[in-house]
Length: 368
View (cartoon, rainbow, N blue to C red):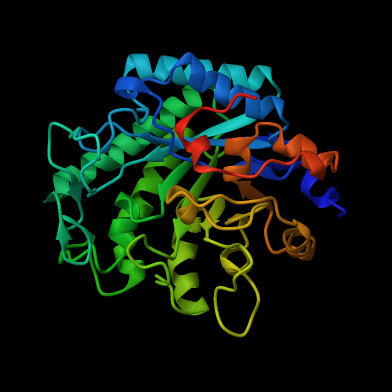
């Protein structure tokens, strides 16, 4: 396996990373009352020491009371939580890595299995999490305006704390994605609409406010998904033309990198081409893209959460697509969750020592 293309440097605005491998954001509920601990800082530092080029944090929620359904998901607001994140980024930098927080609002959610609930109802564009499932309230225009401001404040804090970029979570049926999806956005005001570009107004206003807060030279990433947890085969944009009309306004608003979430990176996005989601996003916008989806492992991540184990798999097809220029960066999730030294082993072609993934890794912060 010639893996040289994975280990070329990448530079864009505030990012200057040593290779093309990104640690994908993965929810880790190890921050009591929303405050990242020393163990969380050690977890990320270990990945930087293991030569990950860019670390994207687990989802960390903005300053809205009902932005989270889990008391142990980290906050990106408040003095204690931000002090915890300062420890995280300082440790990553000391280890020679770069990092961005994934800024998150979950929107309308199922109640958490712990029984914990926020002190106010969940909020979303129309009170819906999926067709026929309502578990919260419809946001007013004032709520929307305050949420946009909260995203901007979190972005400003990310830059102030010394992070190298940030990512907005616009995928997987969380708040921004709930505005995109016609099944969860039934609004009749300016934040609704029959077309995907119309329903993108909320995302575009968030992006513009984030750009205003961080300036022109700070890299902004947005994570998007076509599929929904309630419908794995769903596509927001059903044709390349629809995708272009969806993505280009976000690029114009300030997105530098599109992080294109797929369950399996090798699956084509549209008939007639083997380009995946990231390949199409790069072709249509000219912006840098991150591909993700079962990189380096058999099986896919949703099955992992149901307890399915995975084994190491070849990177040859990934590298073929990267060498062709389909995408710029590669996000890796479960291999790095299980093994902080995965990148180093790939660089050294030490494939005999690669670890598989088991559900037990989800229950701990693996440090060795």
